[in-house]
Structures are given as C-alpha cells and as structure tokens.
Length: 276
Ligand SMILES: Nc1ncnc2c1ncn2[C@@H]1O[C@H](COP(=O)(O)OP(=O)(O)O)[C@@H](O)[C@H]1O
Ligand SMILES: [Mg+2]
Image (tube, rainbow, N blue to C red; front, side, top):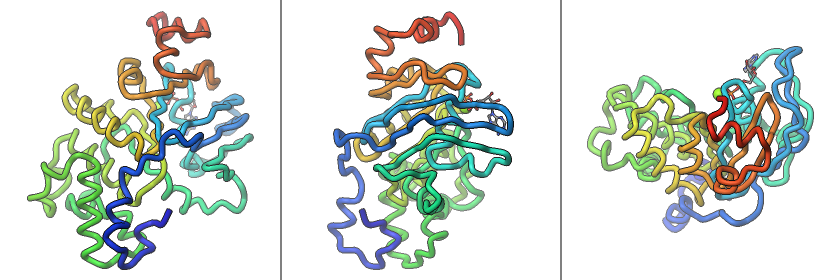
C-alpha cells in the first residue's frame, strides 16, 4: 500500500481506490500471542492470545478495569509512553512483530488510526484538524490537502455538514460531529486499522447511532477494534467479540454466538447483567 503522503502527484485512479477497498475476509490483521503487561509491579494483562480478523469489527467488552483499554493501547504501542511498563509476548501486524526492536513506532502508529473516549479536536479549524497528520508529515501541496480532507470527511460521514464551514473552529461543532471529525483525522493517513476506545461514551443516543452507522460503513475498508462497555453496542456493531475479565481473555468468538450461547460461565454472568 502506498501512503498518500509519500506521493506528490498521485494519479486520479490511485485516489479513487484508496478508501473503501474491501480488505475483509483475508485472514488476520493482528495476532496477539501470550501477551502480558505490567504497570510497574502490577500485572494488568495475563496471557492474552487472540487474532483480530482483517476488515471486520472486533469488540472488546468486560467490566471496568478489566484491561480493555490497556489491550487496545498495546496494539499501537501507545502504552510505551507510560513509565515502568513491561510487556511479554507478542503482537503482530500483518505478520510483523510490532514489539520487535527494529520496529519504527511512529510508522507503526500511522498504520493504526486511534479514536478516544472524549472527542479531542485541536483548537484550530475543521480543515486543519483533518489534515493535521499530513501537515506533520510535511505534505504541503494545497491540492492534495484539500482533496484528502474532503475524502476523509466524506469517509467519516461529516462532509455534507461541514463543507461550507471548513475554516471555522472545530470546537464549534457538536460532540457527535467532533467525534466524526476525530474519525476523519484518524483515517486521513489511510491506516489499515482503526482503534476506538469507547468512542460513544460522551455522546447522546442520536450521535451514538450516527457513529455506529459510520462504524458499519468503515468496516471492510478498515480492520476495526472497538472497546465498549455497552453490550448492546457490541452486539450491534461487531462481528467478533472478546470478553475480558481481570486482565484475562475469557471468551472470544463470533458476536452473535458469544451473546446467545456463551461457553464460559463468566461470560454468561456478564452478558446477563449479573455483574458489571
Ligand atoms: N497508566 C496506568 N498506570 C497504572 N495502572 C494502570 C494504568 N492504566 C490502567 N491501569 C490499571 O490497569 C487495569 C486495567 O485498566 P484499563 O485497561 O484502563 O481497563 P478498562 O479499559 O477495561 O476499564 C486497571 O486495574 C487499571 O487501574
Ligand atoms: Mg477503558
């Protein structure tokens, strides 16, 4: 895959094929194997082993504190920023160990867009927010920036709402629009994977429904991993679900099966609301 930022004047067809190329059904995008993680002396993840299927939506569910965000942040090495962190085991992206010494972490993170709980637009215009990653990469050609911004905003289902106000502050958008803007910024560099950590938890039901629709539209073009504490949401948006408890992966499989016919008693207790 050729990243747009590396191409000064790509042919029109390259543009057209960049987004919404179905990558689904082609095996695993991420392979997590015997993965353990400690914050200082405290172990937060225990022997997590699972493969995330390419082009599908995988939900990470489980009670608060069970390690969902920790596992998600392990996938693009966001945890590296934390002092006293130790990991053991491996995470591979398309077969390449992301924890290998030779891994270029900056390049790795570009292959994985990330969206956080609370929308975090920068205090700048809508346009500048979307193209921020390209600016950081030194892309200067105005025509490329304009075209790429439009494509990302369309991809994030926000274009129609903002096309006439691209130079206005992003902080003037509603919460749901801000989160879609953050999704646009996360996909502008054409990543392979989208990591979302409870992306709707700060949104009202209507904005939440809009984001869920968007996740549906993005699946196939991207491999999506979404953390959610909302089981209905997991059931609605994902094809596969991983249930975690106390840092361990308890159950993993097709979402419908996990919710209707869980194997582990703990999963059954959780999805029926016996604890949470
Ligand atoms: N930066 C950190 N330093 C120390 N402990 C942390 C840190 N982040 C999370 N933890 C701990 O790791 C465990 C898992 O947390 P987290 O991954 O945030 O869970 P979840 O996202 O499922 O709510 C919790 O016990 C939490 O307190
Ligand atoms: Mg969390």
